[in-house]
Image (tube, rainbow over all chains, first blue to last red; front, side):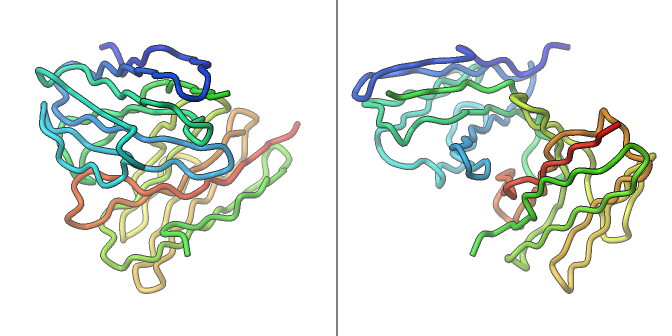
Length: 115
Length: 111
């Protein structure tokens, strides 16, 4: 069974540009999460989809970040315009159900560098 | 104060040593508890869930003390392959699947 995949693995952009990250969850997983690790800090939750609906977006830092999951399959996270503090590793995770009883499987992450 | 706190280490231990990691959490409404392992520049992977009665998986033992809001991970007979960052992770009651991560404790096992 294929795991969670993310694209691209690395992205280097200039401040003010736009970047779109993509996540393909494990097939059949309705729950999809985005997390971010900024250098020197802990991994932090950004948002949670159940199918195509945003269940919890309390972790989204500001309105420069837009996440979508059209059709309830893959998800995109767009940052527009990017700022220096957006640099970090963006992880996507998926699970069969929500709540602590369900293991979240993480993708390899997208390393974003904003210069 | 952070919601989940860990000693960042690094812990440098010889092969065969026993090492213990501790973690505290601030929210008493926390529901589920986990230890994840993260290798350098890789994604986090679930090592084990932590149950109130304590649980063991081979060389790894996890314990939870709800009264003290404290979680521990014990690794016996350390192997070189145990070198990684160990993440204490909590899921809060009624917050769906949102995971709260500690900063991680780095372990380096030397020959």
